[in-house]
Image 1 (cartoon, helix red, strand yellow):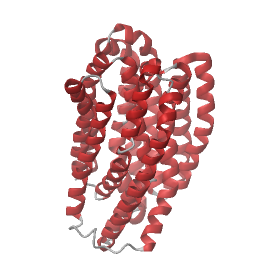
Image 2: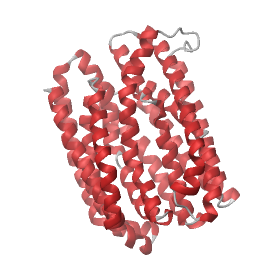
Image 3: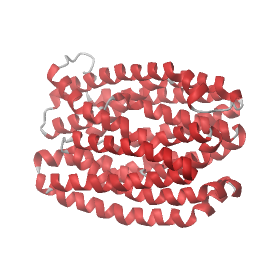
Length: 422
């Protein structure tokens, strides 16, 4: 399958869940209320964020599987995958326990929800903690499939998960009413179904040799070494994406979160377009660094120029039409409070999209430390600026600070990538 076709499958796998969300979100807001929906978006974010407790093993598996396939060392793969599954299981349980242990603090203090919803929010987070190990194992198995460059299958599974992620809570409301607990139970059920849907094809690719394979200590060290720095980046990067909504909730109240998170979530999901390309680029870059380094610069520049053209048109359209789009989707009252935030975020979307190419190139080279340290510095600067901007400028300030961060991220990553591919 060509890189173009892989990217197309990645786009399908990413956009289809968004389309499902476009239909489900208005129904959920109407039937459960704005604050309850805001809490649901926080639960979505927490399950997604705590899934980083795979500690970079998913990405490490993609790198290891791709490297071994490029050198025809397929005999090593069952042992590598078995080690990856064990690590993601252990780390996932740790993440689930951590979320369960902090659920009371989130529900009663940190999220600043209404008193009537505090108990329900705490219960939901306890339930959500069960989904963390499922999410981390899926991350590892997905990394294996991407290492094989089987992007058709991985994206069919993404479409199924997208339907479950939005559709199951909606079905829950239809059947059981506006109960947060039932909606979160449906999210955990979705994770369980998707886990089994990943186990089957991975077992087939490895001819069911995983369980009987002896794990090499060397391979375990390689996975952990790659994953260690990757995990730092994986912890900080999504934290910068999701921390703003929790800080907003704490400082301004959960009732205002939706005015920021709804446009942000829609806009950030458009990163599926650059991600569709860079997800396919990562194993290809890995292969070229081993076998044909001369072609990397050509592929890098072609990919970057393509993204520049595509994302400029998309971001300009959002910038111009945000009020009109939000009015049609969620009504004029909601649009009046969110459209300018959406327009500002569209500028950040452009730079964040472009940053995906140098990010993939640097990580594929094996230099995970560089991206991790870049994100660490960004995070240290971002959070204080976010808090200050919220104090003086409210939601608008949060949007502006996010844009500044992703612009800096693109500039720095590009400088590192040029040195590597030169």
